Image (cartoon, rainbow, N blue to C red):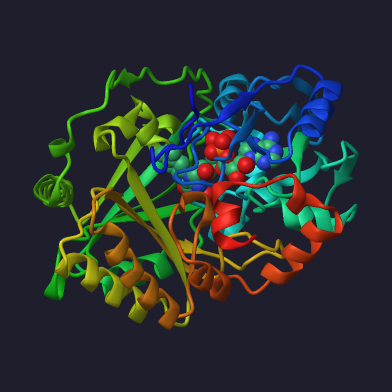
Amino acid sequence: MSINSWGNYPKINNNSIKFNTIDDLKNQLKNHSEIIACGNNRSYGDSALSNNIIQVKPFNKFLDFDQKAGVLHIQAGVLLADIIKYFVPRGWFLKIVPGTKFITIGGAIASDVHGKNHHIDGCFSESTLEFSLMLPDGQIKLCSPSKNQDLFRATCGGMGLTGVILDAKISLRKINSKFISQTTIKTENLEDTFAAFEKYNSEKYNFAWIDCFARGKNLGRSIMTIGDFADDGQLDYIPSQKINIPFFLPNFTINKFTAGMFNKLYYYQTKQQISHQKLDLDAYFFPLDGIDNLNRVWGKSGFLQYQCILPKETAFVGLTELIECISRTKLGSHLSVLKKHGKANENYLSFPLEGYSLALDFKMNNGLFKHLDHLDQILQKYGGRIYLTKDARVSKQVFERGYPNIEKFRELRKKYKMSQKFNSLQSHRLGL
Ligand SMILES: Cc1cc2nc3c(=O)[nH]c(=O)nc-3n(C[C@H](O)[C@H](O)[C@H](O)COP(=O)(O)OP(=O)(O)OC[C@H]3O[C@@H](n4cnc5c(N)ncnc54)[C@H](O)[C@@H]3O)c2cc1C
């Protein structure tokens, strides 16, 4: 059975390789000329797809926990969900979590994922103290911000193209509740939304859902949520139950009409301008995880996520143009999420930079790539970039203009002969 990414696009036949020991992995690297590591396949596009895929998920032991320093040592296949399940009842939480907890530590480092607190805490690499990396020749290097710094900077955000991450030490934060105290703010348009982000900039977690169908004076209206852990001592966390989508839904289930309806309903079901709520951490951080196989609602042809980021100087005007284009063409995304980001880090290919990112889901169809090329043109005009872990189609030229450190990355790949071993569909498409 072939492995697919979360977006179920593209699909290729591949050979899935498991390993039990480090020596086993070394031999597998020796025996295959082209290979890429995968975690739990929650990346949307083609970054974890190749003819030969090494499955790291079964390599998933907890190795050590330094209670005093809050430092956890784990193998790279451990899921964030397993860390949360074990550590929340003990009063600890991950410093950075993306919108799903079903990703591995290796995947979190390789995409240098960010959460709703990037403006304060940065990316996953900012909570990563060190990791060990297997290079193409089987050598293992310990990498940290001070040891083998070039490998650290290239691997965090390097989409598996520098080697196989084997284990990592990450630092956790103390918490005193399984609940989040959340405030919801309803905004009328993009200007209002930006003003709310500025006003609540010192809040730990914040993000906004944008109605991408609204136009004119309502363009960019949103429901914004801000929050942080409560302080009520309730740590009896039990992971939320999930409902399952057992098969791919028919192609007509998701369309422009349902997307438009969903956006309107979501906006109007929030009645008050400002409201407060206490909710379980799963409901706050990972609402999409509540449905197992959620990606099947898009049908067998799959879907794409378009996530881009614009620098703070051009974000308002650039996003206005992007959202206008999306609402005019009725490209329509069910879920459109806007986040404010803090300063970029020094990793060569990490996605976030100081500004605003927008994530949009689009069902795969014949005209989609043309529309997205048009969004790319707007993005380029305003100095933005695309997130590699969501991508399956951006051109080499658009990608390169967004990532000024790409040559450093390529040089390092050459130096360690990584480009002769670790490759994905994405690395070929983008000449990484
Ligand atoms: C519902 C949903 C919400 C999401 N929300 C966010 C979000 O808010 N913020 C965000 O940043 N991301 C988000 N993502 C994306 C997701 O966090 C990343 O794609 C993450 O990298 C997936 O991890 P994984 O373990 O599934 O890795 P995979 O998808 O299997 O692989 C992703 C990349 O990591 C590499 N890789 C995996 N394991 C290793 C390893 N051991 N060694 C070397 N390379 C490795 C692969 O080669 C590939 O390039 C979301 C995804 C979903 C499905």
